[in-house]
Image (cartoon, rainbow, N blue to C red):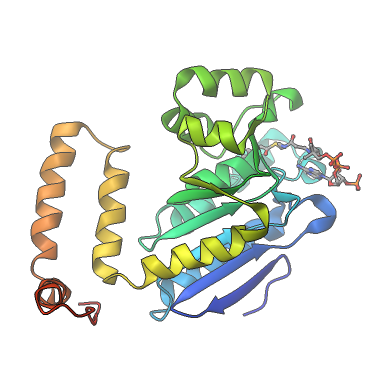
Length: 259
Ligand code: HXC
């Protein structure tokens, strides 16, 4: 499929590389990007050959936020009726397959929120994260106030939301917002390599590991540990678990069936 605002490439080893491509607006997230990303994720979810995805932007901007020029004339009722950005919940947030955000340059407002929907963020040393919505008289509206606070803690999140201050890659790393910082020139290839590592894992185990870590943000500790134990037990019923343990003992790589 081709998209107006995205480039989608299938890389070796079952990796989909999705590049947001609206350079004239620093990848601002207008209705077309919203629809294209929803469609691209739906295609990724449906394609059994694809096991991990990477979402990235340009060197200058991952995404500079929701499109302010598109929002300026909308009435409150329009935001409500369109239920602005709710479409990403089903396709980007709730996808069971893993995906990584590879962020260089600006990830602001909705751009920062998009990155935080990913399973984890790899940042270029040029990355800048911020929630500057307050300067526009609004506030984060796609999960930013909650995901940022869970990632970096109250102090940094509150300061960022109240002042609009951006944090750089190193501060984002120290705060726990990103998994790793890499030189900008290596960002996309490093993200693809990382995705290839994940894509080479037994796929059911990848989906369940993802679900388990996400549980930490969605339920109480005792209940989450109980569910973790059950999910672990379910994985022991898979062919790939038998293969994985046998392959270890036989000192050879596992060959996965995805069952
Ligand atoms: C529309 C945008 C845009 C945006 C940049 N552009 N960000 N257009 N929406 N969010 C456009 C500019 O208007 C300009 O177009 C072109 O991209 C280049 O941007 P410049 O400002 O000239 O670049 P620079 O001086 O390098 O500054 C970069 C920047 C700045 C610091 C990222 O553009 C900026 O502050 N952007 C807005 C960031 C922001 O407030 N994001 C939050 C949006 S609210 P022209 O035509 O002039 O060349 C949000 C709410 C989410 O995300 C909740 C939804 C439910």
